[in-house]
Amino acid sequence: MTTITHDIARDVPRSARLDWSPYLVGAGIGILSWIAFGLFGDPLGVTTAYSRIASLFATPLIGVDAVAQNDYWKSMPLKWDYGVWFLVGIPFGAFVSAVLSGTWRLELVPEVWKDRFGPSVTKRFIAAFFGGAVIMYGARLAGGCTSGHGISGGLQLALSSWLFLGVMFTTGLVVSAIMFRKF
Image (cartoon, rainbow, N blue to C red; front, side):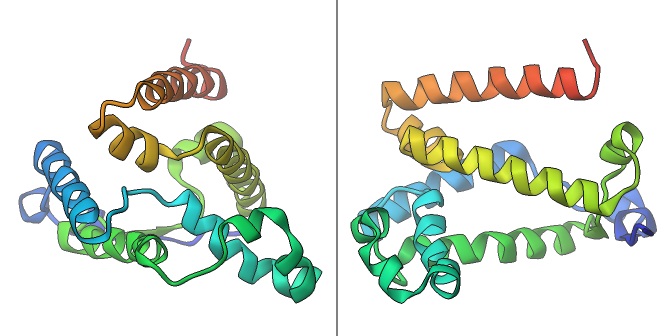
């Protein structure tokens, strides 16, 4: 299978690209967190919204009655609240940011993956799906994701969130070192 790639970043001279300052972006996320708490009384986070949206995808597979009777979806039914719209806005904001910075590209198999695991789009998508399922399960088990624990919980100085961040970064470093043989 062929890899579809178009890298606008290669077409744009370095002097014309806009690189986002991690300090300004971090400050922006902090301000966004204040706004979320102030306007909606809710912290930043996406796994609860993912869980709520999952009921839409489960309905055609298991039926309306099964979804309605499911204890998990009873505790967090689908509602089009701030969290769901925040989740929808993340890919949109990422796209706008990449276009504005001149770094947008359509890439089904990233170079770092291709160098280590080959050019198979199917293999990449399967790995991404299972990786996403594992991280989603872990996030729901932990009661929050990287944004819920890492940003919102960290800003509230929650011990569980700081522990989560430490475990997340350590695990990420170890797994990436093993996968990409950088040890």
